[in-house]
Length: 258
Image (cartoon, rainbow, N blue to C red; front, side):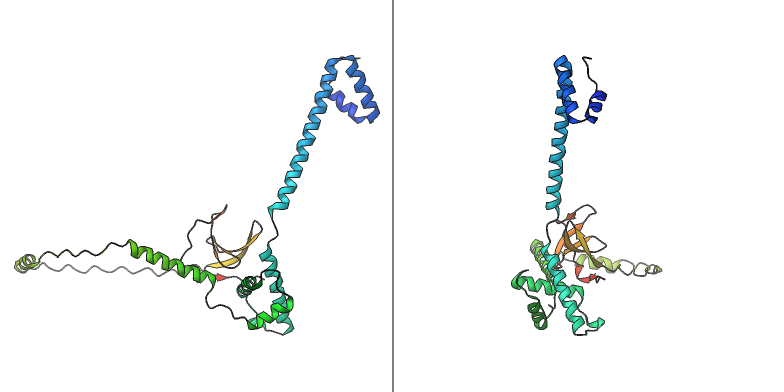
């Protein structure tokens, strides 16, 4: 029997049944140390590959399980909105009088603050809805106002104190101006026509899902939580949470989900 073994021969042997493979390999290992080493190395490589694949599969499975945990807020808002829409249908509320999605979100936030996610029964939600009044000012507006007040206070504290140095006397300059001959007035320049103001692009926030979480995002990249609180600026890759909250967020509108 040949004292060498090739990869082609090993593959051919693997196609045969298990008993013939074991018998053939045993004979070759007895007849040649080099054949024994080749078989041992081939089996070792196969074992390492199988183990590595198993570990990768386990890692991927674990990562997939932990990648997107259940979003309690999204599930809660979906449940509450479904109850509200059914209540509106049962009470024949007109399309114009139906609660806007943004108001539904505010109501959900109110419920969460009162009893959390699991403390509300369906009937309790409808009873609370009958006595609830939407806030006049949204959380986003309050945050924007607080930021403006904070910025104004910072500017005021950094402003230099007014000086009390006396102004120089102007008597000599006034006399010189009186004696000097008056200069001819220059012809008034023809005023150029002022450009027409360009209306700003409307800032519309739309519902946006990112990494399993529910947000609002406008075309500029401003990102708010589902409860309309400032998060940061989307740069196309990640949400930059260090980005300062713009002052004009209050002018934004929210697109209704269809």
